[in-house]
Image 1 (cartoon, helix red, strand yellow):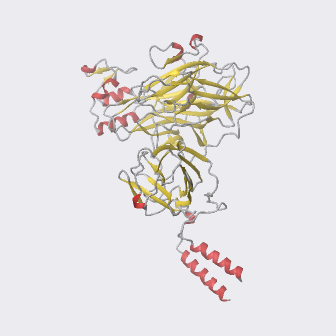
Image 2 (tube, rainbow, N blue to C red):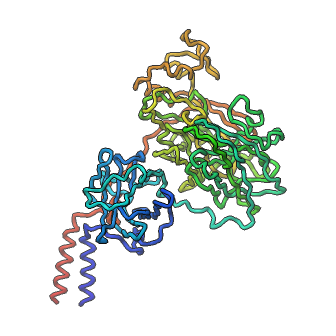
Image 3 (cartoon, rainbow, N blue to C red):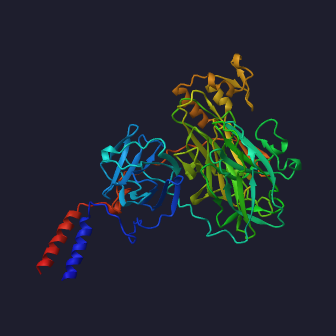
Amino acid sequence: MKRTIAVMVMMSMMVMGSSETTLRGPDSPCALNPDADLPFTVELSPDKFHVSWAFDSDQIVLEARVRTRGWVGLGLSSTGKMAGSDVVIGWVDSAAATHLVDGHIEGERSLVRDASQDYKLVRLSENGTHTVMRVVRALRTCDPNDRDITEDTMRLIWACKDDDPKSEAEISYHGPMNRGTKSLQLLSSRPRSQPELPQDRSTFDIVQDKFPIPPASTFYACKIFSLPNLNKKHHLVEVEPIIDPGSEALVHHMIVYVCPDTVNASHVGVTQQCYVAQEADSFFTCTSALAAWAIGGGTFEYPPAAGYSLGMPEDPRFVLLEIHYNNPSGLTGNEDSSGLRFHYTTQLRRFDAGLLMAGIFVSPFHFIPPNSDSFATYGICDTNSFSTLNRSGETQVDGEMQVFASLLHSHLAGISLQARHFRNGTQIGDIGREPNYDFNFQETRHLKKIVTVLPGDKIVMECVYRTTNRNKTTLGGMATEDEMCLTFLHYYPKVNVSSCLSMSDVPSMAALLGYTTTGMYPYVITSPPKDAGSYLFMVFNEINWTAERTRDAERTALTSQQLVIQQQMSSVNFIYNGIIPGIPADPTLPPCVHNKCGRNGSLPAATAASPTAPLLATLMLLLLARAICD
């Protein structure tokens, strides 16, 4: 009879449910064990503030380990600043009592407790030097004051104070030295593609050698290297950044380009400024990207199925290292030896990998008007002419690509980037997406699922910019203050194309702005007479960029014919015309309701509460009462 009563109690509790949110154990299908080890960690402030975390499809566990005996705080912000951020603050008082506040910031600094306390305390402790706060929260709480935690870039803010507050209402301002922000992809497992690198691997470094960084806001340094002389085929399996201590804030991105075998031997080992008229001819011939790294990124690993081929007659013998130094403060006296380390092996994978650069052709004809909250530009690549390269470098017929990773790239004005994937005129997905783009956090990301790009598919690179802090037109170019719109796609098997870039029709844009130009590059203005002989980009700042004209320019750039420049592996350019297909609206999240795990999020229909639930609960209670009476 006791067993019957116990079963009845359990069944009645299951039917009636509970309004209380509890931490679930490791055996629950929705559970993330909040007491387990946290596999991911980042140092937010050296020897002061560390954060570790773990997550599943429903929730995230965050732990702050901070050198302080006062309060500690973590937050999520759209800008990296306090204003409007979603925060959690905790401390242990002098009586060893713990305090936790789930709140948000109103105005610049005012902490306001959320009506719904969605951060749940796992543990909060302090010792003689540190305070440790571990909390758990649903990824999507449905609280309007909470930010959804997604797979996109999240701006994590942190702060601490050395003294405990007397009360929640008296949490004092942390000051300028005890705070910071860091962009992270919190929901990225970043698994290694293999448990460990092959034992027989070898390495070589492509690095600068104490290069004196000029006191210029933007400087591109290029250096040519010869690769190891390999007598048989190898596969490159990993590329590791080497950032010289002291150069972390100055090295913005690095790209290694393949050079032709005809490169002048006297230029090997020489560093020159890139993209200037005085640059030696050899440097201009290195155009096919082999590897790319940008600030915020880490080590890049090829998947077990593929590696970049080295050592064959058609493989590169010479490469060029391009480093973009970003030095807006004009610092002097810095020498840099940064670069990339390449891990390669004789244990061959099934496929040869390649790297495709797609997007908008870098030129001043790519422009963004000033004072715009949102201005979108597009570049297109049609893969119809792509052919697969076999192991001897000869082309085959299909040209199918399996894309496994992407790096999205723009400069300071970029706020949202997406590589859209079209088939038969319809977008069928994306090949990389970052709606919260951060110039200082650019990493090559492995896609959750490999994307198959078939011959004839179109890759459309979309970049959205914000220029509300600029009163002059922003042009495409190499400087940090200029703009780019590019994606680097890692894929296999290797095809015959290294870059596929486009630019919108300049004469069409000129007509919209009241000018006529010649019909071919470099598009010289022919009227009005006062501007005749100038290039169109030279008069952009003479234009009255009203909101209406800005929208018309955005629409014209989207609908006009595109000039596509496709570079073959042989360095021969193939030029054709293209049209950007119809851009669909991005999907929106479903309504936010309680989910099957007792927290909040998107609810599967089968788990919704039904009108019969109260009746069933009553029936179970009656059966329970009868069992007790018996």
